[in-house]
Image (tube, rainbow, N blue to C red):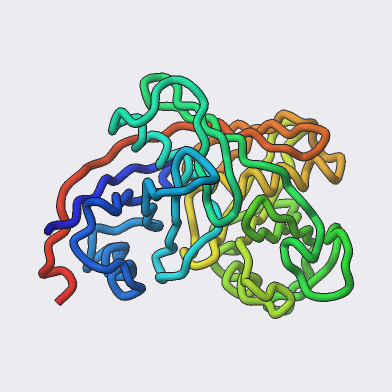
Length: 280
């Protein structure tokens, strides 16, 4: 049996959807790494395995990073998976739920699949939930040193861990240089996603992103949600925030209880089959 793939991108953050009913072999770490490789495989920022059977939502989903590790949640991945469900006529223009290891979300597909809104759940700054080592606390306005540079950061979880570094200016160069150091900082026992955030005004922030297990990324839905939650918590922005990233913009809305709604585009790229020769 051959394995079919469906490739989409969300603001340049690309994923392959693999349906378990169309898998031609075991999806182990080696196969994930090879499939995601930009030269030896199809190339992607990760794999979305679904829909899966679950009693906790309408559809189950597992998310794999290109290094073979598993992610708890992905905002862009959830929008892409929602679009895939639409394309397969498994959902229509009404809300449905997707269960991930990072919690259950609610999605609505709009504009004939081109736009998706996801209720991402609640952000938390609780160190025991993120997790961050040390005494139990809200991880806000703390400092760390990376490559000899002192940085101010906040940590949060939206179902997966994030470290938001507050900067006066952000750049791809800094994200690539400092991101991997912060991702593997020992205070984050599960590693962490890293966002370098510049607040532009009360309703706009700018991000450069280093994703755990994936590296430098053009856009990220969960990173946008986490950074917007930090900006709101610190009083730097209101509850409606446009997040600007190299790949484009996302709309984030935050309630007083830190429930997060994310809206953004999805684009279909291709579909096809994986050749077994790729894994030899």
